Image 1: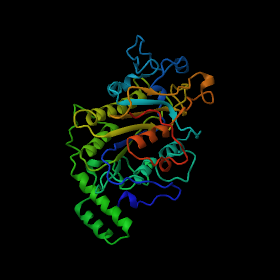
Image 2: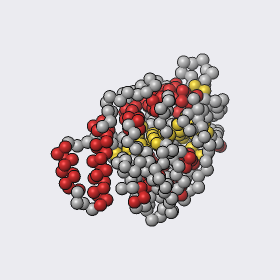
Image 3: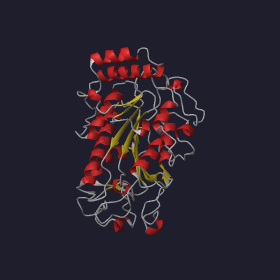
Image 4: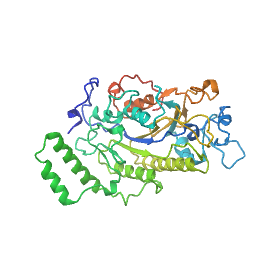
Length: 398
């Protein structure tokens, strides 16, 4: 089933499909940091005078501090914590950037469920939308390869809302063992051979996906350029995505969740639980960057890491942080204007905080997503992908 045959919701504006297969656009890798990642720890504003006053226990020492736990300066204002050190190499190479004080401009509740839904569907405060923003990108663009059975894969159990409604897309939690036995394949072929066309085509694509993934040597995959994926959930998911991209199966998008970001108590920014989660995240991105984006045979890939909301600017009585508003996102790729922290910094003084407690949202996450969609995925159907929103590009892409 081609992209042009996908039935789009009636509320979407008219869309314009590409004339032919487009080999110039990037593969998009979406990483969702579920739980509300603390942007004030991931990229800490050491030069804001209120940062250390708000976080007397969990703040990261300044880069010029006499401490083995001191941060790593990104510029004269922001730093990475020691646990995020693996990201210094792609940052200094100009292929990784951070966008700070970003989030969902519309005020949402502090519910993970609502905030995740609104971010993934690409429009806040609207329960009528059932599809995801990345799904609508795929539905409004011609496939990179018409014959490819799998345009997008989620390395998750169940389809994330980001990809709900996407053509030729499947959740594949364990790509190395994805499949069914030969007798079952034969039974599926008989069952759907005379079925209604959409059901038959979906079954055919599913079987073709099983066949194409079975030809990839996930277990024997050897990363390039000395990259090493850690044996943790995110590291192994990124390794599987790299295998599919290098396997040249026509994959256009991949999604993976990173969990463990809901840090209400004993946050452990240094040497604790949050530090471990940050190390898992940073190490996975570093290995993927080294494997996929370095060397003479680099693939055309852009990676975006987002979270549903940030944490309260002030640490709580349990040495953690409660649900907040703005956070940080990361964008990585050869065509990304990296080596910088893009921001309109609102400040952390009490009168500058939202409701006296939260970092204000000054950059809408959709601004960054839309710029990548248009400039790296060659899709100008932004009104369909991000309904009722006019994005402002922030200089994320070169």
